[in-house]
Image 1 (cartoon, helix red, strand yellow):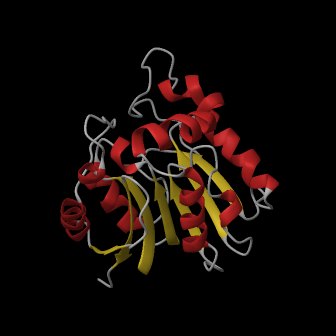
Image 2: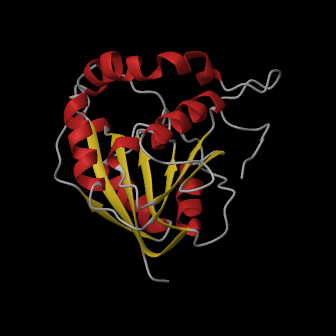
Length: 217
């Protein structure tokens, strides 16, 4: 299943190409060597360990990832889950598909990749039982709408793992693209969308890790 939207945020209206595709080939290098130490003042390897701890006990779930990027989560998701990755970048989706295939996730079998923005997920209600959104939420222009969409496609009682840069944890003078929120603001946004908010005690520079729980309603 896929989508070919002409109004994806960050997309060049004339060429139909997302601007991030221009650096897709360098995406991982930039994250590891520039963004994590320079922007987040955080350890990349520590981030990997934290995500592994969250995901290695997830089994038998239908997982959706909003902002799959180049497929960072592939090594940490057990093979008995069914995975759907979404992103607005065609090139990053291709990288993610190749990476997931290397970890035992086959497209059309236990994995799928769809081009879609977080505000408009092309899936039926209650399609998934777990969600992941890592270092993506601040780039979504319609954040309230994206949370409502996530609430719609998740089953009751499902959980969603988030990681975001947090403004009160940034070093002085550091600028992060997109719209950032404090923990309290994230809690309020989550409640408005029908989620309860559960902040993790994991510490890693300016990064905040938390779960949203889809309420029974």
